[in-house]
Length: 131
Image (cartoon, rainbow, N blue to C red; front, side):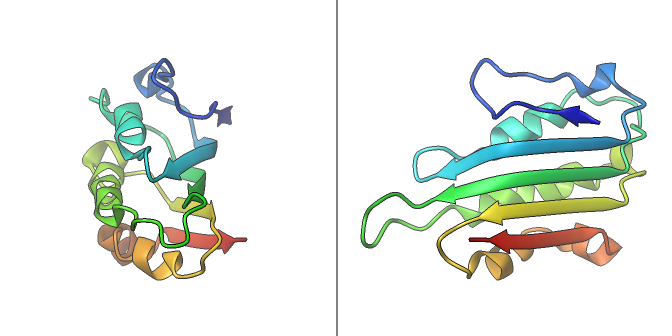
């Protein structure tokens, strides 16, 4: 198991150097009005040229809407890019994609779930909301 640190501009993990990794756990990922973690998550898998042995990915994301009464909506469509990343041939051994998120609202499960149609079709998607 590899435990990553929360994403930042100077944080990079080269998964091509860990081809036999079976489980990846990414805790403490922040998604806010000013920061979208999807490009960082995509960058983790961008250097893959050969298949990984990765069978399970678990990510914990905190959705921070800020203190405004009516904050702007999140860009949910950005998460759709990860569906393509996790269903590429190099990820063919993936058996479970588990996304746990914290938010003050409960409507994210449906909105987020719609962004992963291929993972859903494969039956490996699990999304859980925690308040």
